[in-house]
Amino acid sequence: MTNSTIMVIWGESMTTWGAAEAKAQLSAVMDRASSEGPQRLTRRGRGAYILVTEEEWERKVKPKQNLADFLLNSPLRGSGIKAERMRGGFRDIKL
Image 1 (cartoon, rainbow, N blue to C red):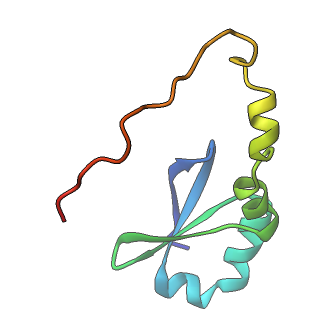
Image 2: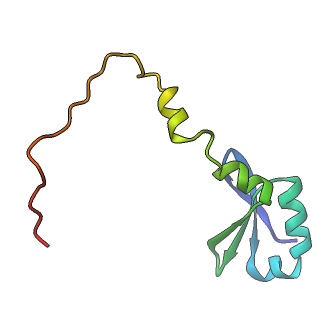
Image 3: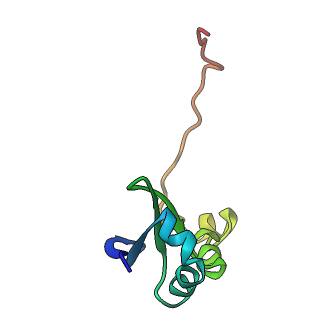
């Protein structure tokens, strides 16, 4: 096996696989993504893809809360900061 751990993303070490090796050992790459975390796949020696489980992907991309909850829980709420709206209408923009 010629893969090597060279990167840390999302606080986890990643094993790197060349495209041909990943294709030949796809089941092993998928198993490692499940047991060890993200797997980096390269094409011609350059980083091309990161393979993660669907569960990991959902965990990383799912918002922790919606915008309304974020604003309601803001540490600035109740701080007395006043935001004033800019006056003067629209700006002229040259296209």
